[in-house]
Picture (cartoon, helix red, strand yellow):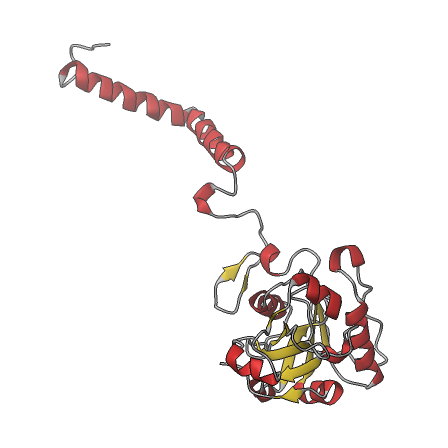
Amino acid sequence: FWIPWWPGGWPAGIVWLGLLLWSLSFSTGLGNSFSYRQSFLRRVVVPRRIRGGCSIASSAPMASNASGARDSPSAVVGSETKSSETPQKTGNSALPEVDVEKEGDPTTYKAIIGAFQEHKIEFRHLIHDPTPTSEDSLAVRKAGGWDDCTLASGAKAMLIVNSKDKEAPYKLAVMPADKKLNWKLFKKFWPKGKGARMATVDEVKMVTGCVPGGVPPFGSFFSNKNVETIVDPGLQTQKRINFNCGLRTRSVSVLFEDYAKLEKPTIKEFCS
């Protein structure tokens, strides 16, 4: 297409014609239609989870985890998480029933809660999505309103086995969740402790009635009663301790003083 009188000859004529048609399209509403189609494609056709490299599927406010990073609500609290209750006292309304299919065997959980109520021990209780690690537990507890929680106040419980000790092969190591077990120190708690090791998943289930991540700091409540609970003195510095109470879905917070009176653990240093 060429208009001989257009300034600049036919190349400039094409440019000018293009600008003219573009201007006309907006004046007639065609431009708005084009813009709407772009918006529709962006909102509907382009997958939501890959646009911009992150998920924007949820419009719920996000919660911060212990390190300050922001997590999606589904990763932190989940659809079935209930908000933190006020400290649970004897005589208050019964706690929600355990969904065995989703949460697991509640035997150990019920035994501990029953002991709290029997001895009139005040405690906080929180239901949440399964949390297999101490870091996961801290995140859901903070999201549930337990603002005073820290990783150090988490009572991490590990079942240790020494097959050479036929009479007392199991010990429960309880420590602050921000500490690590010192094997050299812990093995000394047996006369012949060189063979001490972490219990397997099957051994944990058999001895405690729980799955790893749900083991509470109460060796005296396990079906195998011959389990000594050994607490590192670092946990004594915490006024209140927090732990998964026999289930990965149930957190409990209690004063260390009350915990020690009920469980009567051995206090020995074994963390580094």
